[in-house]
Length: 152
Figure 1 (tube, rainbow, N blue to C red):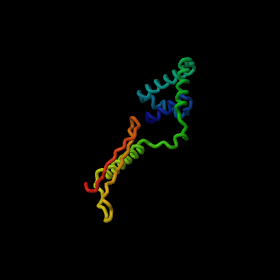
Figure 2: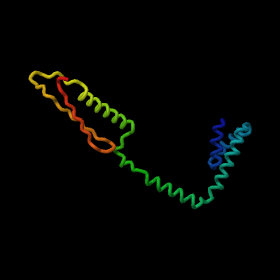
Figure 3: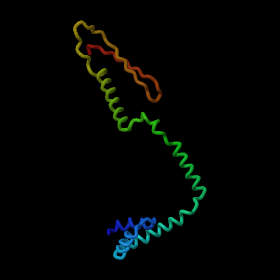
């Protein structure tokens, strides 16, 4: 019998669930193994202490604190159905990064890249590009107009 098997049998013995054949084999092992004898003695002592403490009432102040904590945790708990549209954080970050890149690329193409070659018959009249953005702090709209001359 291994020490792990003995520990399972001794745990069952403490709970009153061990079979007599198992106990006979366990006691044979205990005769030869000092470490298991120590483990059994300590385990049964803890089990006895637990049985003695089990009958002790919990102080009312501790019980009331536990009840308050339970109520707070239940109030904070959100039912699963209300979180249907919750997006995992990595997906949200990836979407934000893609959106930022797309807006940046579109701005780059509008402002910095030269216009495509004009086809015949098109006028050389200047075009006006208006860029708008919302300031996050003051919530004001910023308008920036750029004159885009085809001769530039």
